Length: 200
Image (cartoon, rainbow, N blue to C red):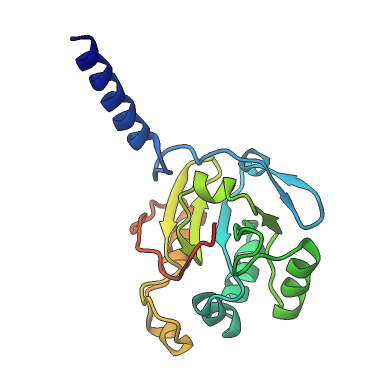
């Protein structure tokens, strides 16, 4: 009986841990603290009252290149930050793995690509990435002004590395942001993210 109780307790803990793992739409966004390329610390609570985008990136990933090489990601960043949205680009590549960059290298990428995030967060230990269960680059999340996660998934509906697919894809991220900014519910709140696996 004693062993059986231990087994049941272990099973219950595994079950509850599984339920608690990962972010959930409609629930408070996972908290974190992360440092940007300028050495400043950021947390979701810093953006209370504002809509916040988290964008996972890896500059060597063909799917990221699709959206930056075409200017699509920069256009989204500029369009929505001009409307008061905060946009944090997150780099969770571990040292020695594809996409890992120093703060100086990240800033150079931002400049050469004409990117316009509010800040670039460095997450080499993968703490923020794992808190959000970020699986690919790009993987996008939207947090509303009340701190609730209202969108997670792909930037759009066509999982290819071809820029020619962008105009005919359903723009999931843009649709989610437009809904939040106009006070409407997000219709496709969870979509399939596509890209290169995050290099933890």
